[in-house]
Length: 308
Ligand code: 0X9
Ligand code: ZN
Image (cartoon, rainbow, N blue to C red; front, side, top):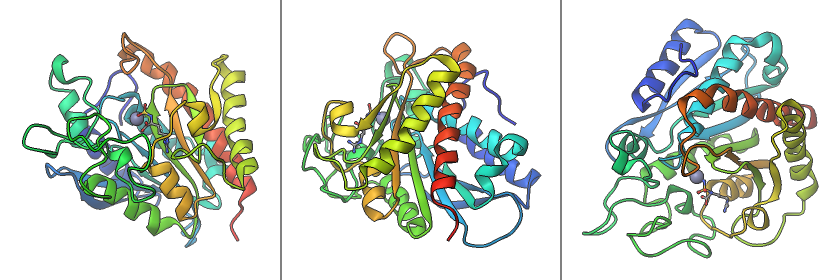
């Protein structure tokens, strides 16, 4: 069991989900869905309520896209604990739904930020992007309006989009997950930092989809729950105008376009000197607050999109 007292490594988190699945063989399943560039295993944990009904709806969650955003994998660990070990409070979120979770999308980058102070602010993947530079922004690498806005063609840039769509194995793995679950997927949630913000499509252009009211309703449920619980004020709205820039090739727009009716980037709260570094003593408070919002949004989703 992992708690909230410190940040964990990718291998600790992989071991944790393996242990959870071993302890709860009817309720949690591990699947190795791919490998990072440096060969780390990308594993999903699927959490169910154990009633073994097939083909439920799906909520797909990932964390750790950007290496330095440490509060993201920490929030995923807490979310897994809640769904597995707190059925009394969260059983309704598993009646008609399975949760599929990839805790660390970019483990090479994440591990790199953990080796020294000098590398703490790394954002990208770790595959060489040119003879001089390393890394692609995995959240500019998706094949949806790739490189059309807010992305760089300079391999040394922090928002380098890659040599082509899905040049990064980590982004390809996430896209495979999105397409695997798109027919029963009702919410895609990708956890980043820092905001706090709840962003919905579109993020590549300053426009909103026809179903903006549905997106706004669910985002607002998260905003209100957090405001009531702790007083923290999230911004929520269309990505481009809320975060104030357009960026194409991100996973949220890709998932929405593939058929997830609800797709959010949640920018978790800031902390520390540069915003990406909440002290370990703040993890507990932050992940609990974020879970209030995430569970409220999920609750709205399971009510709004019951099993067909
Ligand atoms: O720029 C990003 O990738 C995300 N912000 S972060 O500071 N965590 O890097 C925001 C992505 C918003 N979604 C789209 N632009 N589609
Ligand atoms: Zn990010």
